[in-house]
Image (cartoon, chains in turn cyan, yellow):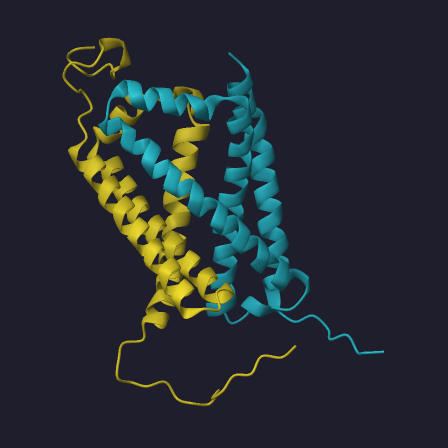
Length: 125
Length: 146
């Protein structure tokens, strides 16, 4: 039976999965950014044009998706700080595992705190 | 399943600037700036006041009537688009195998990036918070017509 190599910083375990999540969240945020620059540019067309399009951000489905977007931005930003700490801080690799779970914890807590506030606005009238 | 790297020990030629290094550095300099810029953007637009419900033309006009938010959003626009495009370029470099496909994708990415930076910059600096002829009920309260 082949020997299974142990996980390292970038193979298996937290190091790899944080990298995967960083990519997926990054790609998602990138495509939202393209749309977001275009929808904001509508303020230059007319107040009506902007208001009509921005109303779609207040619908239930998009409102729910915004929670995912906020979560993706929080994770990507905080995990990016973790990557910088691994690169530049002498103890970065020692604490990278702890830092990953701290990133997850802060993201989950922040989204959990934001969700009731945001959903009340989206689903309320 | 092993990848052969032909000349792993070949020293990098010093004939041209090391763009990969500058790209790597840019991600680490723009990243923390974007954390501050974007997290604040989210708090101001989605948490404070009435959040998403309050966002309309008058809300944007209120922000961009202030040079502070113009500069804030301009910095966010440029940094986020370059950061995002460079990240996408990294992913394209990882997963494309044909040189032509890679070039086509990265060229497209940078073209879209340049176009949106140009568009966004023009919008921020040519924006009129109180456009003439607009219906008064859509304008911010500080507009003479409102």
